[in-house]
Image 1 (cartoon, rainbow, N blue to C red):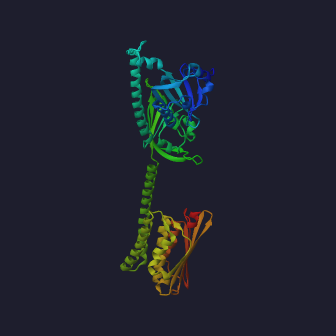
Image 2: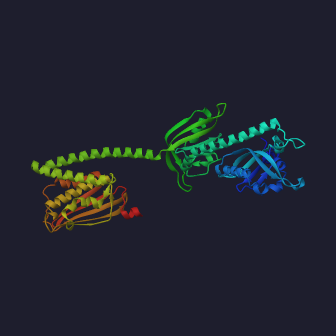
Image 3: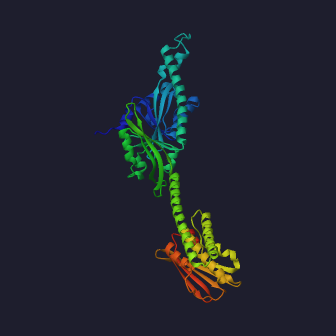
Length: 498
């Protein structure tokens, strides 16, 4: 296929064309423009348009405003009719000559999608209606009516200019609505899906990247392999819209960051020409990431709630059965059973305060020891955040330990004291909690003749629920309980800060 010489094509265009940079300086002008302005290319290139063609009046302000609008919005602008005097060359006596022009200003984009230049295409319409023909008659200076055809054509041009101003205002209003719409919008054109328009919400979705004038595959390369381009292709081929709901999309919203998962509701609507053939796609939708994540969290919480209710009912059933087997009278059963249910309830209250995210180990211990007075216990260990399952289990364990100490151990005398020390050790499989419960100053202790419910609850609950172990040491000076358990993805305060 032969190559087209676009520079030669530009030079030979029959109507005047020129290109300005963002400073409104000439960077190119074709032969037709040079003839219309009676300037050579060397006289134009590098010069500022308002230095070469000054006009401090309304026409100059309108022309400058049109250029600035194109640079700011990236949208073409038309001046249907603008009177603009141009300086004549010295060879024609100098001075200025009034001309009437019709101009179209078109943005030219750089590789980053920014407006870099303005292309002007002008038509000199001065011959349609010369000002002297409208103001004066033929020789002799007698007033005469202007040429009827020229007058009508001029009037139509004025009407067209006024209509164009109205259309420009309406277009700007529509564009502002488009840009400020809460949902994201974009217009893609051609088989490569080149970005023609994007609004603020779309820019926010993609991290503010410059995409105007760039194909989709180049502007958003992370979409490769995510099916969206295939869907766009099907819309262009079939002319049928496509609706997506809560679709997952990976977007690199930060230049140096990893792709981030977002969820979007969207529609791809084909843009049809007069024959009904698709030539582009209108993209509209909304970022529903927060909604999707909230729905997933709600489902997770409901599933977790169902699981916890079942576990709680099983725990209550076990407590009732074991308490019944280890008590001699209904009154004793009621007292022990109610105390254990209250302990379970208190642990649930503690978890509710954190929306069932867990609780600090120290709070779980203090929940049982605090009623006996601060002088009756000593705690020593780092702050540790327990999971909900660990909180429930250890809440029951400490309830049994405190109840036993109040009935038979260190808390049953005025001089007794309970010391609780713990630490976290890192081992294979994650950090493990090691805790020692020591009683001092109470009655002498002797090993029980049989294992009671409290002992079984302490040992079995740790083994079955939270992958731990417990060992009771009935030393004569006071009961000691050694607990070890693997912490499930929990961290100390120092580790969290690091």
